[in-house]
Length: 353
Ligand SMILES: O=C(O)CCC(=O)C(=O)O
Ligand SMILES: [Fe+2]
Image (cartoon, rainbow, N blue to C red; front, side, top):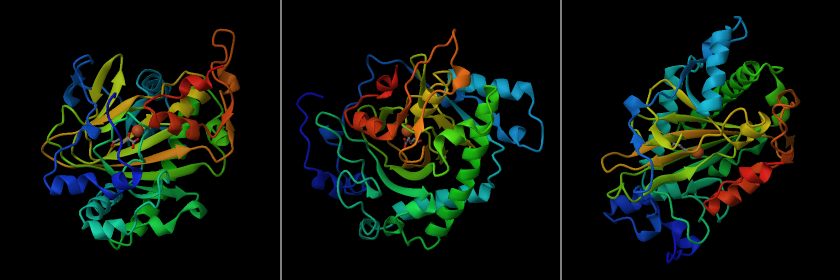
């Protein structure tokens, strides 16, 4: 946006959106970039046909029906996302992670600040998005970002000690998320008639998981302010747990579909690296979060990335005469993805041959 100047990073990091709301402050121009006039219409959640897929039908003990595999493939080719049910995670565990997230953000600022990220552009810890580049607006959001897997990559200095059960609950949730990444990666491979471990092999034994707890405070100017600006993730895929407040929207054929909140579902959303590995068969879904003036919203996003330094590229089985290779092999795509996100751009074109 022309004419918008940025505050120094320290000032931005010192000021949390949640505090602004509590103090009755209005969003400043730094937060305002939403302008829907030229844009496609939003589709409300009750009219959003985002596919719902029962992952229990892909468990290794039963033979998966062709129909289920087709349904998964079609969801990922056309939407780049689906709502996963039957994922094997007890509701109590989903409720626990939502509840420690809520308790964490509802604490006084002095407590939360103990876990603040130290310096821009450091990612881990409590704070806002790293200050974006000149001209990019800020998200109406606070977050807590933590590496959770492999275990030796955890930086416990950023893991809250309050609420008391936070660490234990996140450790349990990580184990469950690891299981979901394995099951989903296998099912995706099968749906494309590939060897079931192919994506996991590409991502490496030390493929990483990081958890981002997002807190979107209510906002008096929802028509002007993004909870999270439109973007595609740089991950292979991301697993999103929502609470009961809507806000997440997915782009398909120039329409923004609101993702329904289903209490026991996990939204699996593909990132650019899965589009690359499937040679463009599966789509990385562009998504955004809108704000509302009534209620605060919390989500927990777990990002599944390749191991640092591991080369990934299109599966050989998906390259042929009709579908020539669309993408190069590359390493650490997440870094270039992030630099582009900071400038309000996508990076996927850089991966094209
Ligand atoms: O809050 C959400 O539902 C989505 C979060 C998201 O897209 C992200 O953290 O990348
Ligand atoms: Fe995202």
